[in-house]
Image 1: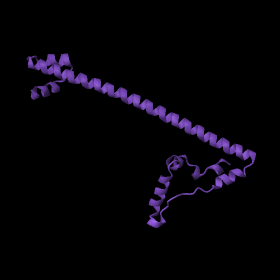
Image 2: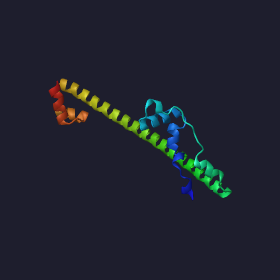
Image 3: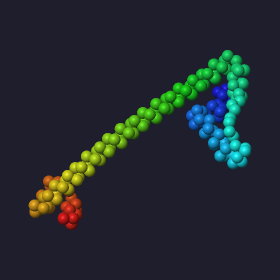
Length: 147
């Protein structure tokens, strides 16, 4: 019985895109139909839908079922929107935390390289530099090559 009330005319996405912007609908239809200048759609007229006609002929039980269906659709949409928003917030928070961690790590790495350069300039041995900065022998060799 519920499938009887599913109608593409009630599509929420369609209503969201075109509902408050009738010019968008006219432009879409004109573009899709490849009309001549004199055939272009300039205004639209909304006719009563068969859905409205069906609703007016509903029994009380059918009308309650119809209202209940659309109430459940509204609740489901609200829940989906809430879950989407929560997911976005969690993703942003996680991304921010990862970015901060990467920034700190990069800063510490740069600081270690800076200290190693100074130690090399003072003539310290590689083993001491590796021990104090945590750099590898390869990284220290690269620093020597840069100097």
